[in-house]
Amino acid sequence: MTNPLQLDEQDTFFIFVKESISRPNLEVFVFDACDLSKEGVVNTKLINKPVAFKTRSKLNDKKTIVNLDDFDLVFLKKDPPIDKYYRHLLDMLISKKIPTVNHPKGILKIGTKAYLKHFPELTPKTFYVKTVRDAVASIKKLRNCVIKQSDSFGGKGVKHIRYRDGRFYGYKLKNEISLSEKDISKMIKEYLKKSLDKTMLVVEYFLSAPKRGDKRVVIMEGEILGSYIRLPDVKKGVCICANNGAELCDPTKRDRQIVKILRPHFKKHGIELAALDLLMSKDDVEHLSEINIFNPGFCNLDIVHPELNIGKKIIDMLCRKMI
Image (cartoon, rainbow, N blue to C red; front, side):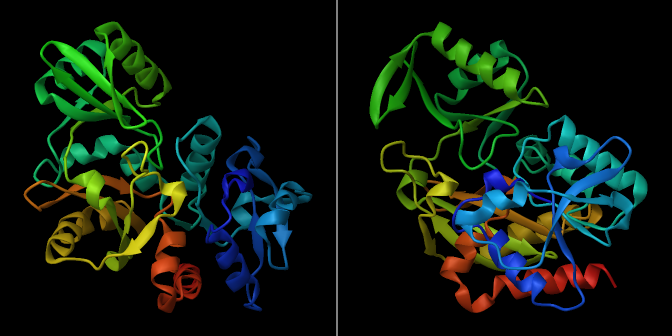
């Protein structure tokens, strides 16, 4: 299940389709959450040949009608947020007990950045706020921070904010610009309005993070598949996932310790595929900045680790789920 319009040129969706249709015992369909009716009928497209990025629009030519409970497994590969269509799909998958990757209850439980509040010992200092007043107060406490919507993704909407000598400062093309408290309040109000769980994060800013970039650790069934660094945008100083600025960076002992702490949570909530974003503090300690259970970042992992054969590994796992 995915939205074809959200696919980028290097998306592993194309690899997964190619691998799936090569197996004679599999039938592969694609649909989006909005293609599901209230009665549980899906307007979908049967895929029987490889799909290219340039022809992805043909995926919207959905003429096959299938009952949702006729699927043996649904692979939930879709960006957040969880809107009313996605929520309807998740609720129906739960009620019909259809096998999925990841589990709908797990997606609903862990699908926002606010779930990080369970791991204060692993994250930078973070305030989880629901009001403009609390957000402004948190920015003043941290003085050097980033703000982000709880259910945003891919680095979208992340803003670096400073508070110094009674004034707020933001950044545009790496240039510091002065902001009034009214400007900040308006920005926060918009974040909270857009967030489905009405939460935003105010997070301690690590000065060394933009120099090294975000580290992404990709996990399958509780074990590390591989990891890489996403280099920050040179103008904005934050990492934008869609840029594919990936470089190989092997997991560390600290990474494995963090995964060990999170593993019971993934198992309890049925999360088989996930990724962790890790930032390094100025004293060179890795800190957890995000848990991603929507799109773990297979395309970049495939770039830096082609020997892993990501397509085969993932489809093998999906087939095991259907036995």
